[in-house]
Picture 1 (cartoon, rainbow, N blue to C red):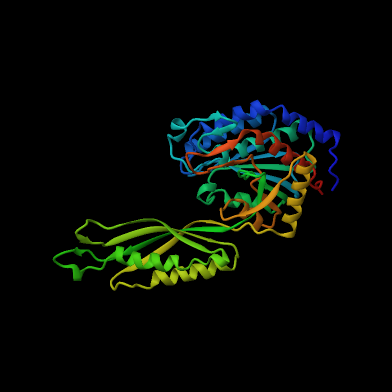
Picture 2: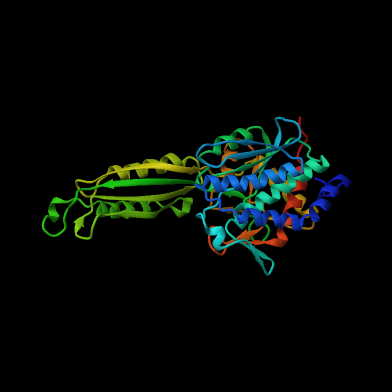
Length: 389
């Protein structure tokens, strides 16, 4: 592909170069709105801010309402088509209500801080401005769709079907998760399954009638050891029990216990194999008189690089070179909505958003000087996608 930038493309890139202050203003507004995944009101208020931006810049959008989780927003530039270019981003964060008040948006030494500043409110800002640029200059070669979803951090229970439906019509998908240090984007991710399990035992006095009890906590200990033994680092399979609860009082044989585990894998074939092994562990009781049940409550699919996704990465990397940048690709064990679009058959790359780190922690940060270059690279990649058929 020629790396020469046309005059029309320069118009878009030059306009984006003037939008740094406006980008930071929208970012501050979004970061200062609490939008935890289960906080529908907060997620929708963040959506309202995005809708105001889109409306002010003439970008067409519709709201896809949901009763439990935040509403989705679907913006479109250009007439409907079948070879769309899809931009993705989620408005929810992992932080509880009140966190934005405790840690409001601030900047220091070239970095911005605040809950969700990198994951992924900066990516939302970038997508907003790219959509605005394509509307202003009419330079998208195919219909451009931007999804602003509401519940990625918990496995996209309300957004997954919308993502998959859009991805089936897309020639290219750019997911604006935070870019990684070193100007990296993500071309491969693990799958992830979140699983709850409950163990039932039998209560008894721990001193007077110990032998009449069946400890759910004791059974949990056996199961945790067996579950963790399923980890196979050579195959990039991990099982982690990250939450445990149980018991009644210190002097009672525990009648109940519960936990949550995280299963990660790469090869789609390992999904059923691992769930089968987990089921076997749950069905087998090491302590007589105990029983266990489990359920999957959230799931992400793997982002597996295909030949088409490889070509999309090469297009993106060439656009970066045309702008005097060098990008690299990485694989990560983290999950994202990119797995859903990839599994639906769309060429997908992830983490094309502005660069940050420390996500899901009080130290989360964004490199402010990465916002415009990342927006320009994405815009150029969009403009160099194939024209709509």
